Image (cartoon, rainbow, N blue to C red; front, side, top):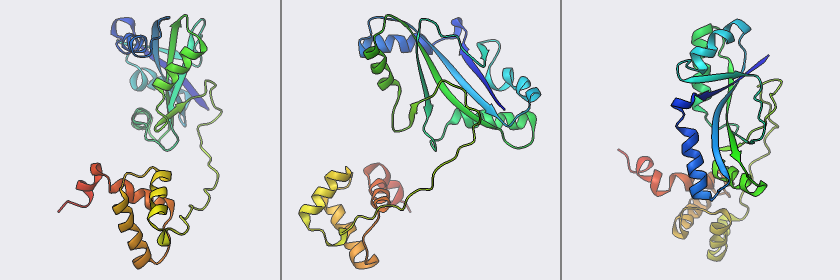
Length: 232
């Protein structure tokens, strides 16, 4: 069974909502926006009703500063945007809640999924809402979440296909390597790629996979290089 609750700060303690409203008006020009309300949504599975009841005001909300709503929110006259972490992306809030639940009730660690729910008040067009979505959703780490409660939090994934090999990489001339740099959007420069090409041609005696090139490209970046290749 999946339990769902929503938590928001009481008005006297709400800093995030007014700050976001001001940001959307000033940065995105959403002049019709009057207010923003921010909720943290928690979906919980793997805990019994008694354990969930105990956890509501210990794990998910602090009664002194938070308001807690269960199962459904009645969103009338507002535009709603829901944002959650991408599958596989670490969600610190969900992980912390799951750990706390396990310590509170014992047994196996429950599953917890979190999302941020934004209520946008005011006269907003569909284009305004799309602007707000693009501002709130970084596609590298999160996505728009569904509003309906799932029947289960268990995840099932299709079998991954074989990783693509960069065919002909070992024999590419300079023009082809330049084209690959552009096509893959690599951080390394042409000389770096030539060095990598020589390694796969002379040492591995094969073409690399896309994954191998991207892993090397990541760790070869200025940000990572000094901690990866220049440490003692």
